[in-house]
Image (cartoon, rainbow, N blue to C red; front, side, top):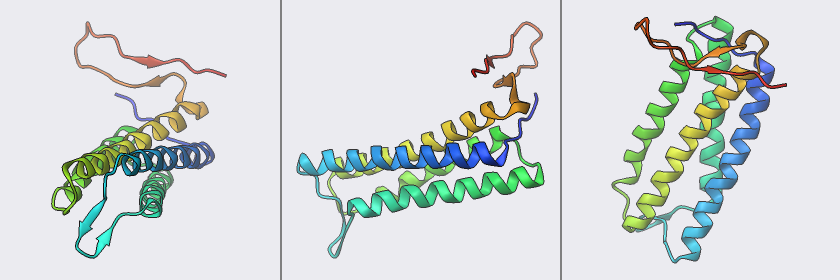
Length: 157
């Protein structure tokens, strides 16, 4: 299996676009929930606002992109490891929504925003890696089986 490094410029550019896109989609999910009458109540004194959703999304992306940039500088770990860590954190963060006082709909919508943010991060790393000149062709998967062909992404320019 090969590891792919990411250049910093494509990482930051792609990451910024993905963060903004994910924040907009999360805000839309939030807004659709509010339009449907969903109250995002955390406890008796705290509710979630759209600004909280957008800022949480952007902060998560910023932390993930900093981790990827540091990993790139240290030449460790590979893109796959960062993607797996990002996905695991996104799934684990859903646990934050379980104990809130909100309705089941609020919990599901908030959880979907966590998962969407994780998916956006994974896609951003994939796009940044595939846009790096050293990543052509980018090996997505490898198998120890001699009969299995590796899945490859074609570079587009």
